[in-house]
Length: 430
Ligand code: SF4
Image (cartoon, rainbow, N blue to C red; front, side, top):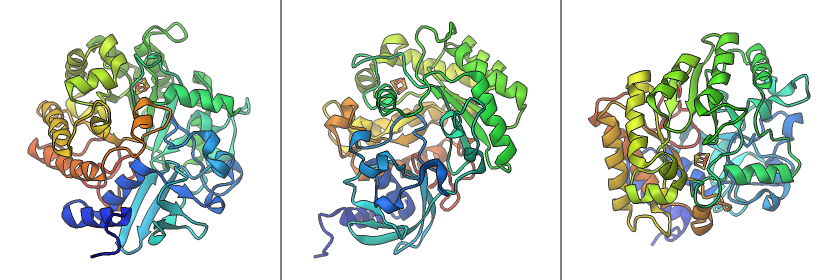
């Protein structure tokens, strides 16, 4: 019997062997995203003073412990992402978003080696500090806080509203720590702007344009849902005003995306008119019962069937391939509400994929990170089974092929060794 039976190493080895159609790069990436990574203290960054790009906390915490339990990583940030290569699986370059978990079996040491339960697994390359992070806005704010970049510098992530107006246990999505993350950063005295002024965003983008050497390709406007108004504006006009200002100042420089509620068609048209080309009205989880339990705010303010109808209506506005609703892969297995078996969870998720893809709309997914301040993270600290995540990658690829669809636009090149999307492996396997 192998010495690795019953260990995480054994699980990874078993799944790599059982699902040869999924590359080992993706199996490891999914496991690191659901489990988090530990860093030796001397593998952390020197924040904005060093040579490595630090974790920006671009929207959620994406950590598996609160800031107060992260030790040195709370004051010396970890890198935003890491790139894996080599090792016993001879990995091609694989970019993984950093989710901290001091108790993770995955550890990065000072020699920049990744190990799993002490066994050497890969070389780690850290993201270099981009020149634009070394400059500040006239008011002293940092580019990292105002307009951080992720996906190895491909995407500018503009969380212009750091709070969600779905509030409290009866409205917030059960996997989401946006409001908690805002509170914990404020409490720690970190700069963390609730509503980003348009002028700040433009100034930060100016610095990016001046110094990025063409590396950024897209921006995402996002934040919490707006159920009333912010700055006197309803959701379409609140997020739209940033797109309008960006497109006026830097016409066509980037692919403009927005993550927002599924809004009525006239509002989707407003996004388009403001200059947005890709719309993410995220449906989070497909199953009817789970949607109402896991995303009670979405159920209450819009309702599942209407949400789905609006996704398809938006396809008339943007074109089907430019409507890319996200779901959070894994929450369909979360206790106490989730499916009992991986088979049921996969069947339900694939039903959702077929529904949207049969209309030409290709969803995408992020890998669930069980953040401890959320109800689902608290009850499921280990996240969903790795086998679910591995099987989903194959199912997603098969579903795209079944419906004759291309990989979604706005994520760069697909494929092992080329993908930059860092919070799930869906692009790595296409
Ligand atoms: S809609 Fe849900 S996932 Fe989005 S910010 Fe609000 S609570 Fe979080």
